[in-house]
Image (cartoon, rainbow, N blue to C red; front, side, top):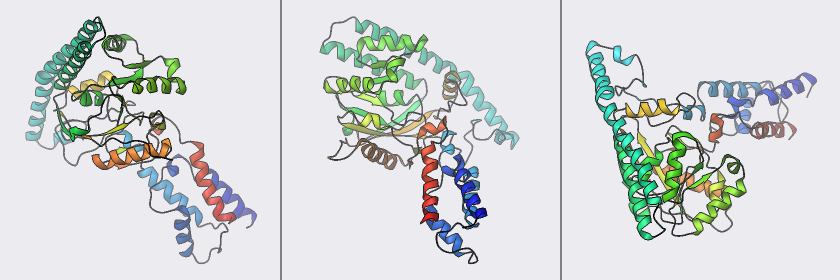
Length: 388
């Protein structure tokens, strides 16, 4: 290998595995593709030496992933084949004809002038009842009656809030519903996932303590039910979080914990990497698959584009929120199985049941750059080809 080839190989190792190239399609190994490319150029050097035609592989991968990759498309709303009279699919569709424009305008009047006021009224009633009801129940001494009243208040409130979204939900395999002392894990599309699941059963929520209206709701809820709220400093301490969760599931009289292991909202076309923390604390895992029907409304929350108020307004001005929920059979960690493999096994089961794409990528790529370790892995693979 001469100096020019060595310099070019170094350049490819530094620039060939940048962010877009790193998010690669699963269409064969790097070594296999490069060897095919070399066979199509017989004038190149044989064996493991670097050849200039190797650059075409990295260029091809870069262009492919600039056009479309497996990750970034999961953080934008799923596009539809046909227009559903909502503006999100294509703003120009309503101008195709006068008739279609009139229909669209009538739909806007119905959604904003009739449905929206009714839905806002229902949401206010639901949230007010949640705060007042849980506060009153929290004044009672601990007993079975208090637990029953707490469950009644929570489920009634969530069902009122679901009506505020015109939610139509179908629950499947109800015999597998999460039981007390367990952990319910589900794929995450929207903040309303909590409302969808809590319509059919009560859960202990896990999250960070907030201020403002959210803080008022959290403080009232925890008075009647043992939800697990963490201070900001505690959230950074994995051991403190794990300890609190273990103590909760050790008490078989407490409600099952609801956790979304992806840690961010995905657009309901796929399931991305589950964080292993939820699967390290032990206990029985109850997987749940949630699949929304985008024909009636887009449930995905693109937090980079919409704040919470804008998102809720979009939900309340959609035609409806239609979804299916599947309760999967409970799963436990097998002998010799580590938390990562257990998390992947649960994730695969949820993806298969919900008809979602099973991806191993971290949902944290929504806000962060690709980890250097991922780039180094690709660089090592190519280096081993040359050195070998």
